[in-house]
Length: 117
Length: 110
Image (cartoon, rainbow over all chains, first blue to last red):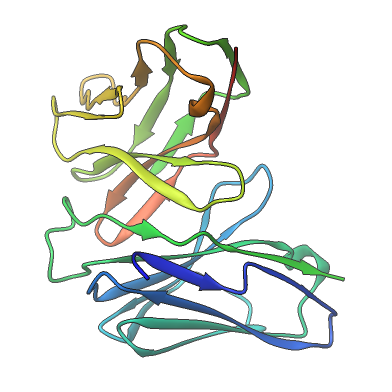
C-alpha cells in the first residue's frame, strides 16, 4: 500500500458505543494529523502529532481520544459520541518539524465517514 | 489571525470553459499557500502550492500565483473537463498548521 490509508471507510455507531478509527502512512513521515470535515464548514484540525508526541489539541472534546504508537500509525478512539459528531474524519501526514514549514506538505487519506445515531 | 476566504459555489461550467476560483487570505508572517482538490468519495489531494510571493504553482493544467500585494491565490484553468468536477480547497500554512477555506464545488457539464 502507498500513501495514507484509513480504516474503516464507513462507520455507523450508537451514542453508547466505543469504536476506533485507524490511519496508517507509508511515506516515511514524522507528523500525523486528524481533521474533521462537516458539511458547509471548513476543515477543522483536531490533533497533531510530531514524532509520536502530541503537539496540538484544538479544544477537542474528551470523547475523542487520539493515540499515536509510532510515526506510521494514528488512531482516534471514540466513545459516547453525539449525533453532531457525524462527519468525515480525515487523517494526514507530513514530514513534520524536521522540514521547513514552507515546503512541508500534508498528504491526506480517503477519510472515514462516521454516522452517529 | 490567519484565515482563508473562498468564493461561494457551486461553480457550474461547460466543458472547455475557462475557470477561476477566487481565494484571498489573511495571515501573520509569511505563509505558504495551497490548493487541494477533493473528488467525490475521496480525501483531499494536493493540487499545487506556492511558498513565496510571486511563485506560481501549476499542475494538471491548473495554475495559481501567490500575490502578496492583493493577498490572493486564485486558481485558474484554461479549459476544464468533466473529470475536473470536484470540491477545491484553498489553504495556507504558518508553522505546522494548515488553515482551509470552506471549499468551492466545481461542476463541469459536457
